[in-house]
Image (cartoon, rainbow, N blue to C red; front, top):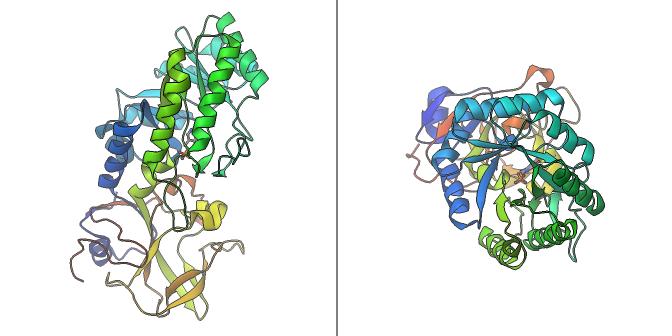
Length: 396
Ligand SMILES: *Cc1c(COP(=O)(O)O)cnc(C)c1O
């Protein structure tokens, strides 16, 4: 941790960082968590994979999140070491016996499974009291309009309806408590997808004839990127609340959700620096193999708001020009998938701050060419929008 700064300008003036710095804004994380906890009709888990930094976990815990979706031994240890009272859900549907035993020893009780083989493995290694969370596939194209998600999370995991029902029945045969989970896809732009998921899962639970206590409706709630067209989160909560009353309550099922992106994206940005300027291009010190990996996968749909700051921390202005943005590795693919509209005077030594990278930023960075940066700083001032000025920043 480099330190805590009133503004990004103050950080730049004091540190002149040459390597990328991941900036955390705890007040934004806390605000997102409080909004979910207040409005979601059930318990809110945080999907740790999108940002496992201890400061993030602590901030969310203080804002009222007590449950965490974990998917690896590292994430389980990180949550256990950081938050002694957290309840973890091991929501990876393909685990080794050793991973299950480690989770059991660290107090995990809920385990995702999406087939009978994984269920029997959990039954053998998770110990008494384990709850099988059977994962249902929600294909991206399902429903009249599809889920509208940017990423389909049902191509790799999730049971088809017949396997889902068979796995629930096998859990009952084994004497295990059962729950249900699904994921409509990340950055889901259609609240309707959650309603369809809850309806489908509840009807299959009825068909299985098994009593189920919990239904975790996953993450997928959107963050609002430059081109995102999605209703406000309140519309998602209202739709989910109605589906809960219609289908889940009559079956005595309690809802959970496990957002990652919607809780963490606004809580972090990435401060990069221009290493070289050519007439039509800039070379940055970070790129698609580092903190900007998700930009490569999400392209225009996850187009990040950004702003340019001169080496003294003042905002760069002036007429905009589309410049190709290359990352730092020697790989020819290391280029952002779209040109950046930058002030024409953007120069070597300037900083570009990309916002909405608190989810799937630092966690996805690779070590290619030895160029990963793990530097983290806390900033109190908000990011003030595309090429805008930082709210509350002292005059440069
Ligand atoms: C990635 C993931 C999440 C978080 O998804 P978001 O789209 O970031 O909200 C939740 N649950 C599971 C099982 C996941 O794999």
